[in-house]
Image (cartoon, rainbow, N blue to C red; front, side, top):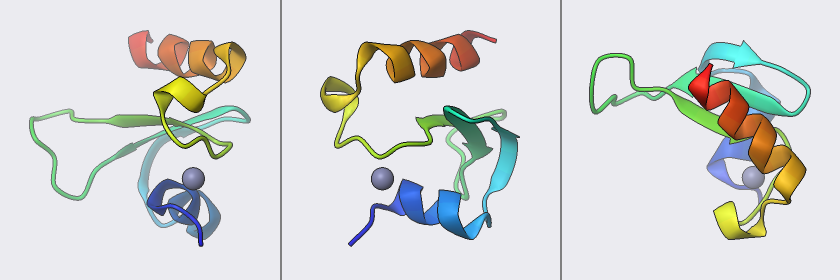
Length: 65
Ligand SMILES: [Zn+2]
């Protein structure tokens, strides 16, 4: 069973801000604030502590723009 983020990446149905090889970002269905955006690695990791330094750095770089 996949996680919700992997399902979004496979289905392509999210409101994507960007989709790159290692990182994607999308607007959530229920934003907590104007401009609320989720940045995720395109490979599955259980949580931030499971994410290797490379993909984590790619996600952070996308987050800060
Ligand atoms: Zn996943």
